[in-house]
Image (cartoon, rainbow, N blue to C red; front, side, top):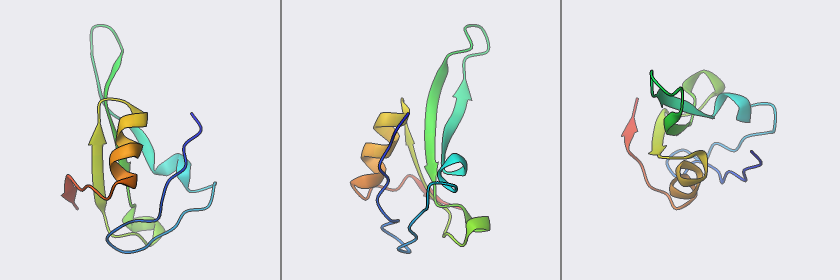
Length: 75
């Protein structure tokens, strides 16, 4: 998984490579198959972000939606 993440469209937060591990991750897993069903990209508040969250059916889709400036929720 090698994603290029644009700065947050809400607060402008930009990440370095060490922070990305806490930015893109699976949020829903099928309990029977173990397959990841949903991924999220989050502008983590504990990393000086704003809480903006974007969801996708894959990590690629979530990143694509993030980079397009879409928002599903703000924590």
